[in-house]
Image: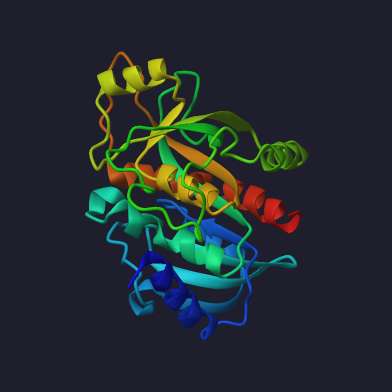
Amino acid sequence: MTLYDRIQATASFIREKTNTKPTAGIILGSGLGGLVDIIEREATIPYSEIPNFPVSTVEGHSGQLIFGKIGNCPVMLMAGRFHYYEGYSMEEVTFPVRVMKALGVETVIVSNAAGGTNPGFAIGDLMIIKDHINICPEHPLRGPNDERLGTRFPDMSKAYDHGLIALAKEIAAERGISVRTGVYIGLQGPTFETPAEYRMLHILGADAVGMSTVAEVIVARHADMRVFAISVITDIGVSDVPITITHEEVLEAANAAAPKMAGLVEELVKRL
């Protein structure tokens, strides 16, 4: 079965489980599962029941597709994502984004927990992603291209929608939410970076680093969907004194910042 056929089969299964016809898709990162509370739920489908779907193995990723509304906007939400470091291929990691497109999603909102490489950042900051650097070892579009899914050579000069970035900044100002804007760099993981690597990544032009998001964004743009992405800075790796980082501390920092992010994302979706 081709990738296109698998996408259509999965989308067909999901349509039988929900009446929601989503126009926006939201991908939640580590510790940000509290964002599910902003949705007026219509249906919840565990990943384990969805044909062709991987299953998330990482703490902080519950593993459900949630359908419903935020305001008047019909949405689907991924409560938990998949990562290359879990052993999945990039095609598997990004498969849900393909399914979003097949279900009618026009705008994808991506969130993540990220390490700060910019020494001016602080733990708990929200960073709107304006661009990314991809240094992952496998590209999600590698292999034969199916023109039904997108063009062979997608333009990435405006990967992150400038209109959505401006709208999010406007909402943040209205709500008194402090936001940063920066460049996200994607690595394979699963190790957190060394102090030397944090410094190198900042020299390369990155303000934050993580193990997700980039492949999802590439595939969303390949499918001609608009993209907005935001990071919670959960640790700062640029320091003269090495700081030990644990996944539990990352989750704690992400959970602390989640209410601010939830408010911003909720209003953004309502204004789509």
